[in-house]
Amino acid sequence: ATTTVCVAGDFRSSSPRILKAVIFGIEEAGLKVDNVGYAPTPMLAYHSMAEEAGAVMVTGSHIPDDRNGIKFYMPHGEILKTDEEAISQVYKELRDGDYSADFDANGMLVHDVEVPEENESARSSYISRYLDFFPSGCLKGLKLAVYQHSTVGRTIIPEILEKLGADLQLVGWSDSFVPLDTEAVANPEQLAAWVKELGVDALVSADGDCDRPLLVDENGKVIHGDLLGIVASSFLNADSISTPVSCNSALELSERFKGISRTKIGSPYVIAAMIDAVNAGDKCVVGYEANGGYLTGSDITLDGCNGVLTALPTRDAVLPILSALLGAKLAGKTLSQMVSELPPRYTVSGLIRDFPNSVGKAIVQSFADNGMEQVDALLSETFGKCATLDMKDGARMTFEDGSVIHFRPSGNAPEFRCYTECDTEELALKNNQIGQKLIIEKLLPQFSN
Image (cartoon, rainbow, N blue to C red; front, side, top):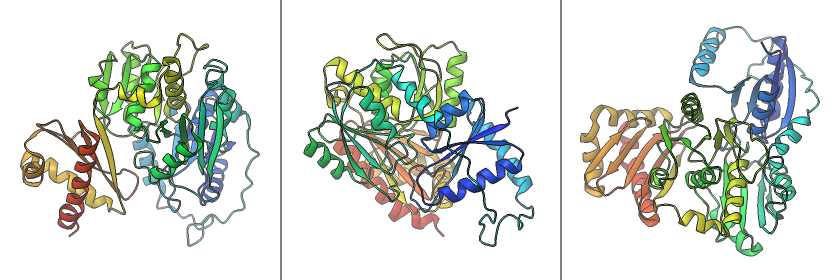
């Protein structure tokens, strides 16, 4: 069994305090702490897997600064649902204990914890992961903007891009935390203005813990994460893709990939499907989510690249960005042209914040209980007849004209998402606005009582 646990955190204001509590707990258990510092989640995962050690990441990902969380890793990588169940059981056994000697009445740790010196090798090995695989100078000639804000990758991403030959402009550094949600970008106008002002080929960034990429094309348009996943997977010659049910169906319509597995929403489900694909004998096994987070379930070799890119079965922001940029450059095309070659299916992810999770679950349960009767009563007048209702994760409705509406409460925040997919971007946006209005005006009052 491992005797070391690696730790890292994001730039949230509460992260230093929570990190100290985590370090205290690890040392109280008689284990050693390997401090990776304020670092990307995939960097921590890559380092801990190489060290065959467990890991704890303090991050709330894309949600606001006043909320935070903890993400656990086993020596073999990100925890799966079975691991979550075991952790929950241990928590139940421990939660009623007396911890007054360690925490005050406000739940704050009373001990003065010494934070170990940062292990800088984790950063260098993570950067080398990409510099060793992608050809030297392969991005030469590309002019890129990097939106730094408060992501923990704000100096790492520029270093990788610059060492691969790109000409960089750095924008948007923030000393306060910016909750960048790559599925529902709050400042697309500012991103587009930077692209236009700087005359760059693309703008790149990532969310707070740098496991979800943001890529903006040469026209200032955000490339949706699930479309970025298809472009990156094409470059990597993937033969098996695992992705949640909420992701764009251009994946199947493109007919570019041999094996596709649709999962529930959440990286543990994607990882489980990738494990099944590896066990079935697939060679290049990858996965991605609607937020753009990219996972590799197998080691990858690729003509024109160097050596082996070892598997990293957790969300990563760097690999899809590099794959899309280099793929477009080698094809002599812009990013917008690469996306335009995909079948015309457009997705919009609408987010309703401060939405009680219990209400969200009750809404989805009502679709499970009442089926097509509920869909017809609520939606048929606006969207026509519903062809299928998929309750794999939330309520996903596909109508006879091919339009999709998907209702789903967040699993880790008081938020409710409305996904839409259509043949035109305008209709996807219109349907999303209609769907959100329906949720707020009809369903929220009905299930809040």
